[in-house]
Image (tube, rainbow, N blue to C red; front, side, top):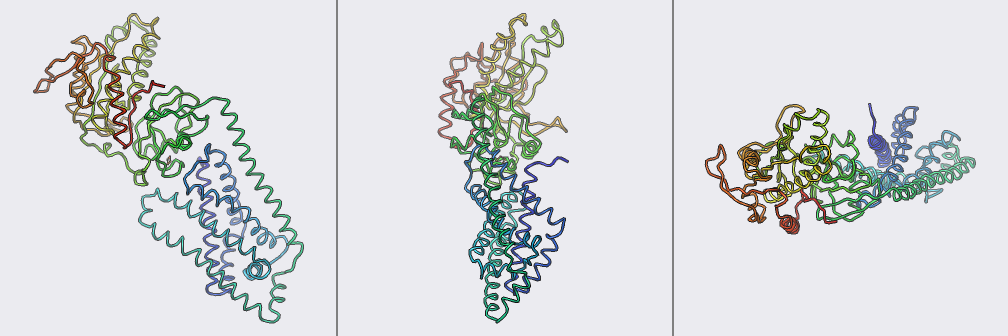
Length: 582
Ligand code: FES
C-alpha cells in the first residue's frame, strides 16, 4: 500500500488533535474538582503513557513538524489564503512553547522521578511561575485553533459535513472554554489549599520537589530544543532560497491565461501558485491540497511535455468527470516553456462546486457547434507506404488537429479512421462554441500547412483536409461502455456537420460551414461563397458557405468578437483562440 506524504501529514494531525481534545477534556474536569482532574489523568495516561501510545504520539508530533517544514519548502509561493496563513503561523508558534511543557512534565517525570500530576502543574502555574501558566494557556489555544482549522478544511469536502458542521462548531467553542474554566476552578482550589498550614510542604514532598537538577535540565533542554527548531526553520528557508536561485538559472515557465494574460514564473511552481503570485483570482477551495478540484484548468497549446498526473490527481479529476486535457492547477508544475491554460471555474467557486459533475455528463440537450474533418485521398497514400510510415504520418496529423481543437477551446470527441469529430460550446454556450469552431478550423488549416512543410520529403503530394461545421441542438452526454465511455453528442446537428464535411469533396473546397454558424458567432462570413444545398435526411435546404481554405475565415473578426465577449462576460472562460499575439 502506497502512503502519500499528504496522508501522513493529515493523519498525524488527526492523532495530535485527538490527544489535544482528550487533554482539554481532562482540564475541564477541574470544573468538578482537582481530584476529578487527577482521576481523569489516570485514564489519559493509560492511553498515552505506554510504549504504543508514546510511539504514536511522539511519532505523529515529529512527523507533523517535519512535514510542515517540508510543505513550507515545497510550496513555491508564500502567498496563501488568510486561513492558511493563520494555520501556518499558529503551527510554527506551537513547538517552541510545547518543548517547555514536554520537558517540564513527561521528561522530568521519566528522568528525575518528579510526579507531574495536576497538583504539580497547578502549583507551578499559579504559585511558582505564573508566566509559564500563561504560556501554556496560549499553547492550548494555538494548538486547538490550528487543529480546528485543519479539521475543518479536511472535512468540509465530505458530503455529510454540512449536516454536522454546527454541532462540530459548538464543540470547537465549548471544549476550550470548559478547559479554561476547569483550569481556573482548579487554580482557585489550589489557592484555598495553600492557605492550609503545612499543605504546601506536604504536597511538595509528594511530588518530589524541589529538584534543582530537574530545573536545570528543563532550562538547558529548552535552549537545545529551540536551537534545533530554529535550525530546522532556517534550513527550510535557506533551501527555498537556493532552490529558487537554481530554478531561475534553469529557465522560466510562461503561462498564457485567457485574455491573453502572460505570467512568467520559475520552474517548479504549480499553476495555482503562479496565479497567486500574479494576483490572478483562481478558485482553490481546499487551498491547493489537491482535494476539491475547483482549481481545474483546461490545457491549451503547450510547448512542453507536461508531467503525468499522479494517482491522487487522477482520482479527483475522475470524480468530477473531467475530460482529457483538464488538470488540477494546484498539482501541475510545468517545465520551462510556454503553456496555454484556462481556469474552468470562477474564482468564487464554493465547496458545492467541488462535488458537481457537469450536468451535461448525465445527458442533456445543448446548443453546440460540431466540427468534422477528414483527410483527403489518404487511402491512396496508405496503399503506397509502409505501415510504419502510415502510422507516423497519421500520428503527426492527429497531433496537429488535436492541438488545433483543444487550443481553440473545443472538446476532441473522437478520431474515426483519419477523421476527427470535435464539439464546441458544451460549457461555454452556442455563440462562443461557434467562434471556437471557426477558430479551430483556421488553426487546423494552419497546422496542416506546417505539417506539409515538415513532411515535404516524405509525401508525394501535400495532405489535404475537408472540414464541415454546423451548429444547433444536440444530445450531449457521457456514452459508451467501460473504458470506451466518453463525452459525445448525437442528433441531427451532428449528422449535418458530417454531411457538410463530405460535401467538401463534392465541391472541391477545404471548408463547408452552415451560415447559421457565422450568424451565431456574429462573425461576418459574407466574403465566402454561399449556396443553398439539400442535405440527406433534412426536409429544408441549408444555406452554407464554402471556403477554398479555412484560412479565409476572417481572423480579425474572431479575435475582436472574442475580446468583446470576454469584457461582457465575467463568467468562466472555457475557450481560447490560439494567442499568437505575444
Ligand atoms: S485547490 Fe483544491 S484541488 Fe486544487
